[in-house]
Length: 467
Ligand code: NAD
Ligand code: UGA
Image (cartoon, rainbow, N blue to C red; front, side, top):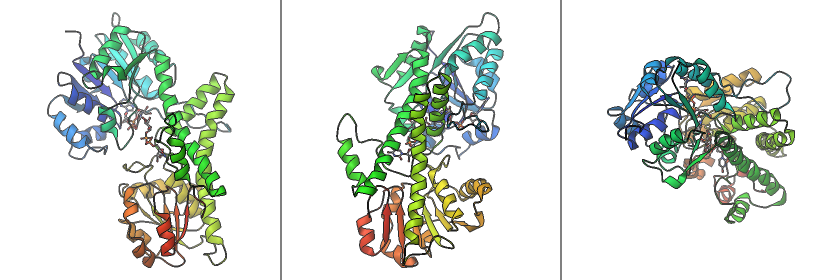
């Protein structure tokens, strides 16, 4: 039928816009898709051999579709003009904290979204479906609709839908190809059906859920908050394990075997990082506070507080163990091999990585660091730590290594900061020979074989285990 969508524009060529449109292009050959961005470097990278986002499977997908129905461009107005449906997939960072405020809540900065809405209103000469793919708090779609109405050309109609994204970094293509669900929030049934028809090219219909706009906006924030809450829950229990002699892996298995709880997302760690969990919980806290629901705000506040506690107590444990009699007399001048720096395995992203917080604490306590991460480029590690140097991090004490053994050589202590599976393959017998004695291992991600390390003669501590 003629009213099917055949032309899409996506504003924002980031982690979400790029991979999402590559998958839509691959699954919907009759739809032409133009991904636009105000950053010309981003667009050139999408048009080059070296894409700006690394995701398994993405390279081949983009390179194939670029020759057919997928275009990356900086000509935003033209792409808007030609599209029937426009995704807004720009960033929505938290506003800087108000000075003196003790709340962990933060209103998201929706200026990029508003800029897109005003631009769409100004440029559009035909009716458009405008889809908020960015994560936004409740009410944002209504605001976008108001802006389109107030600034649009006479006689041009706009329908605004909420269609949040649930992909995870490192598995973006797989998540987009096989989503657990797709949410389409709105009050215009015809527009909802048109977007649904796009997804139905590859997503089974029962997985496409239509609902009202507020539900869809809130379900995105709530999903991230609940996932983060599971991490904080298992991490809170890890502290109890260490005190009573329980083993967190066994407790997680014991709890997760209840089908109602489930095994996923119960991996104990140094806490959650990444670009979204912090900001989306902060947004939920802000929303709850602004709705006069301080108890709800306080509940989610604790998820963030527990996340910080995990890093604090990990560093405290390193200090305590290495200061014991016969130990190293603290961290002053000691070399620490830091294995991992990304916020999680499978990605080179360092946004809100717990590793940076641990590194800064170690530096503040006088340690020298040799850092190795399989995917984070050297300059990202140095820049990230240098940015924290304002809070007295001594960046001259940091060296970045190109493999785990070079990081371990000459160190007194090994700390595991990201759960890369390659750390399990390290030959620890050889590692011990490369290290000063007594040798310490602190496993912040519960990935190593601790029994074997103890047998070899390491002093071992792992999150969630009594040693
Ligand atoms: P990103 O920073 O990688 O990309 C956003 C892009 O938008 C940038 O390239 C930027 O130049 C561009 N942009 C900003 N303002 C613009 C404007 N006015 N006009 C044109 N281009 C503009 O961000 P992202 O990680 O793709 O996240 C986008 C949104 O999706 C956020 O709301 C985020 O919360 C949400 N989200 C992210 C993920 C993730 O894994 N990264 C997952 C789900 C949802
Ligand atoms: C998360 C969500 O999983 C996505 O559904 C969502 O779309 C996305 O946020 C978003 O809105 O940006 P992502 O941040 O890429 O995706 O990564 P996750 O796999 O969720 O991991 C987040 C953090 O939690 C990582 O630091 C990870 O190491 C940590 N984590 C995760 C644990 O400590 N334990 C676990 O069991 C799982």
